Image 1: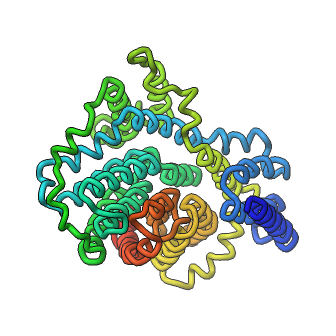
Image 2 (image 1 turned 135 degrees about the vertical axis):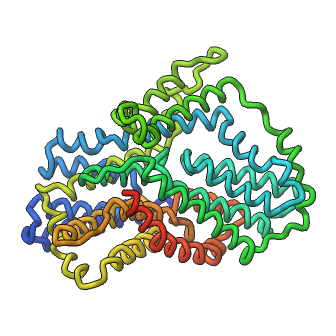
Image 3 (image 1 turned 120 degrees about the horizontal axis):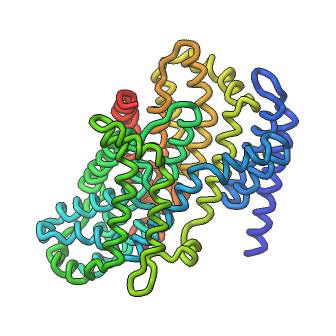
Length: 485
């Protein structure tokens, strides 16, 4: 088996190399594309294959090295936009803050608080509503993996407590809700969420910066509408069995939860302070612009970096709240390495020295000009939401942005009025409508192997949600984003 997997891996590496060579031989400079652009496109095509079929770790490390070796960018330039990009530091520090919140029991405490209210007793739909809302609320601020793990454990404990077996409709309802409502809010805010931060970085690179508040003003309503859609799917399609729900006792849930200790309280205060620093520019810009400017200059990286330092410095019972040396090995390093590769390509594909943006714009602009303006947005968002069911949302974002951002820029240059910032934000939202298949997101396999939910349920219950959310994104979210950005 191991030998077979190794052979398959070598085959995919060979295919990626062939793709690179063929593209490099067949593609010629011209129509805006330079020699460096040919190399960049060839590397991008081969790397996409590796990301899909081999992994996102070492291929992402290969990207900056190859781009430097082929002379697309100098070593100094490449390191500044890859390892030195703000997204790398931001994701690293926010993941460490997430570790502190998980270890101190903050996440579990908040999750249990919602479903242990007295109004949940004997009211299964109220319970489900609180369960779903708590999931969405936490995911607005946290990484999806710890939230998924905590909620799956909680769902299993509730099912066992009430006597529901794996495969029951009640268990399906809980795990399906986790599957959908952990990943959708993962794109709703830039707090601890790489996709949103990457898009904000992309927009800043093309001179269209947006604030966290602007982003969240679109992402949060979209997630709350997703919650309503999931409730309707539970009601009319899943139809959970509530015959055993009378045994649910919120008081017992509260008793099983330990009070938040001093470490947890300090971690919460520091996390709230970090979030406040991110949102302060939007809060104060109307009545205290000078104060807002102080927070604006801090950017996205300074608050979590200072927060990590405080969590490491503050000791309670002779132990730090965050042991950076140890906890560094608990964060998903492949995600950080993936960001290096993504940022390396994001900067070279849009760099004037490669001419890739101009070339793509020249190719696709005539086609885009021949169809109604709004159709371009609808088509690109449709491609995004279909592809994200099978591929990593970060890969999909990078592909769609690289292929179509130059087209929209070219159309705007010739008199169009596309709001690229609004399009980019909504693209992130639909890229996170990713749950129909195990490959859709890192959380999907956890839900599909829980014993409560099968892949066929992801398809049958997930497809209606995908269709409705796509329409909502196009009809409501994009126009809203155009007004706000």
